[in-house]
Image 1 (cartoon, rainbow, N blue to C red):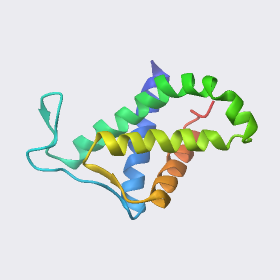
Image 2 (image 1 turned 45 degrees about the horizontal axis):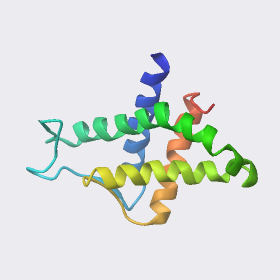
Image 3 (image 1 turned 60 degrees about the vertical axis):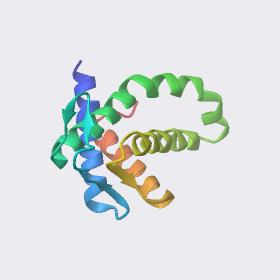
Image 4 (image 1 turned 90 degrees about the vertical axis):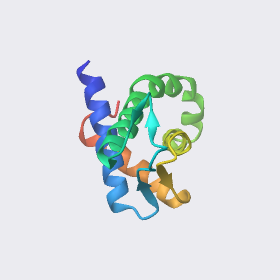
Length: 126
């Protein structure tokens, strides 16, 4: 339970840092369209909690399963496939939430690096 909390906190912090420091990454409320689970998200911090929380849940539940499945590819690519997998998770968030926008492959890569750094410093890289 404690690890789940830290994964969610890391996701929120990483998305926050990416939107503040990387040009091409934005998180903006769309009036009358930012409604999820019957709740209207009319502030950016609410969207940040939602998007970062979903990233944390993906990293906690789905990533360990895909890490085991893609282990042969990671061995063949000397671990670089893990970067591709992480980029795919963030790209999935870009697709799921129209409020979260990443413009191009370079901002996607830099956002992935920020997520990796935050997870590393919080001790979640296992």
